[in-house]
Length: 110
Image 1 (cartoon, rainbow, N blue to C red):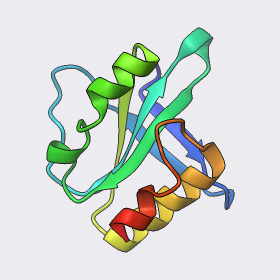
Image 2 (tube, one colour):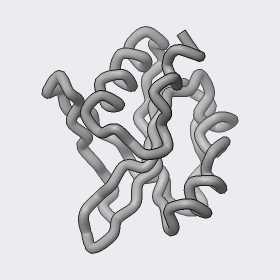
Image 3 (cartoon, one colour):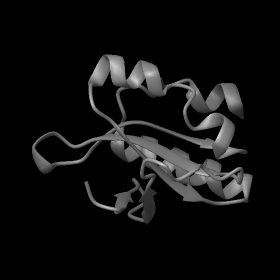
Image 4 (cartoon, one colour):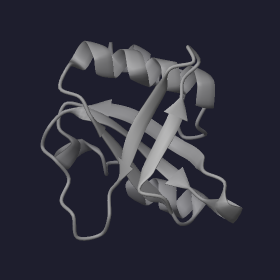
């Protein structure tokens, strides 16, 4: 699995995420995150979201993701601006349509 992952949004913008390696703690800062599978060397985003605190929020759906989709990797992107995080998240959802992201995910948070 690669350490850096560039995900392209519907707008064409590219967002760089960093792989969370075992033993490295999550940051308590705000940011975006993605659960990613790597079957046969091709990355597939299973779930993505934004969080005010990555330490407490980035793993909330982890167990479900692994149970439903198998081996998973966690990628994070630090970003303290909630407005920017929400924009980036919406852009990625529109482009990637991750299977664990329901259409109403943003409506509940907005």
